[in-house]
Length: 181
Image 1 (tube, rainbow, N blue to C red):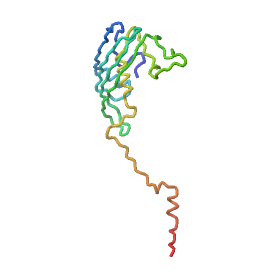
Image 2 (cartoon, rainbow, N blue to C red):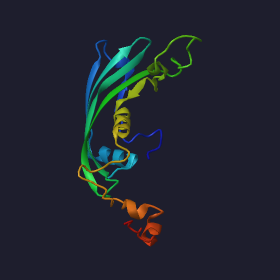
Image 3 (cartoon, one colour):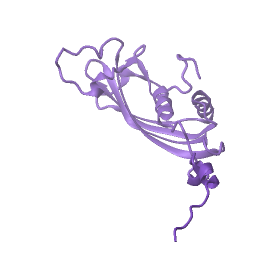
Image 4 (cartoon, rainbow, N blue to C red):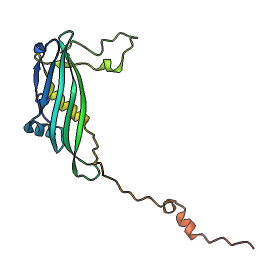
């Protein structure tokens, strides 16, 4: 994997430059960056990767990123061990705030919260957010951890119940019962 401070793909946005109505960003990831992302998430290839994002300012100097990524990736089938290509489509939604501005433990005792309220926003670093790194992260999270080709099957023989019984051998040795006349 890449070093934590060096994402495989980066596209920085200056938070102070985000207009009041928001900013639309279209990312088309080039071949070199797709190769770095594939190495980083340990798959054979990322054939295509694009994202359409909307970045909106939030109260307190933060930002909210929403959108969708689309990709074609090559993974290795866990059944056949053959590489295969599949499509990935994932919604992106991330909140950003200045470091330390919002903490998840700022909840009063007895206050009802939703589980989504516990997600602390990502930090704005040096006044910028990295929507490229977020796109690569959401791609990694969207991948099936046990990828399977659509036609891959495990062919197991059905066990013979008679042979599986511990008494099957004894039954074979038993004398046939006599018929009563």
